[in-house]
Amino acid sequence: MEYTDAPSTQTEDTMLCPNCGQRLPAGSESCDQCGWKREETAEGTASDAMAALLSIVPGLGHVYKGYRGIGLLFAIGTLIVLGFSGLAAIASAGFGLGLAVFYWIGVAMHAYAIKDHVFPSEKDEGEQY
Ligand SMILES: [Zn+2]
Image (tube, rainbow, N blue to C red; front, side, top):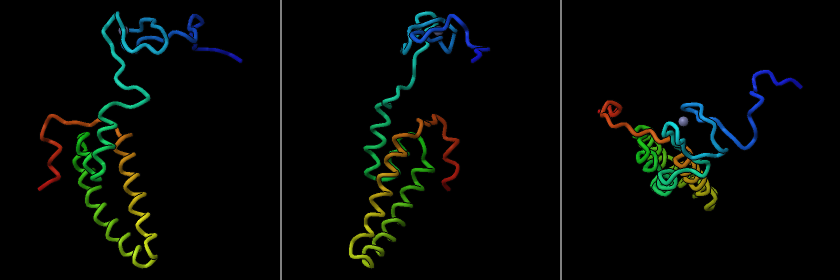
């Protein structure tokens, strides 16, 4: 095995600051040298949980994170899915409602996983007439 680019001084329990290159303990949340802070953790942020919670109304979680277009799309999609699953439920003695539940869970998980995308400007509201 060859290690071409890996610095020989790099060990498992240190990391380099992505902003200034200062050597920090592994898993550091911030850098004393330049004030860099880790923005995201693997567990997700409070707004992730909030977005998933708001997805009780599908689309609301996306709007909360700044995705107005997608949120609107999911809200409309919900009506369509509910309509179809309602018809399917009539045809399949209730099983069709499972489709709506899967859709619901999918929207909530997507709202949780999607990155915050909040625009302070009004520019991105152009798609609404
Ligand atoms: Zn730094």
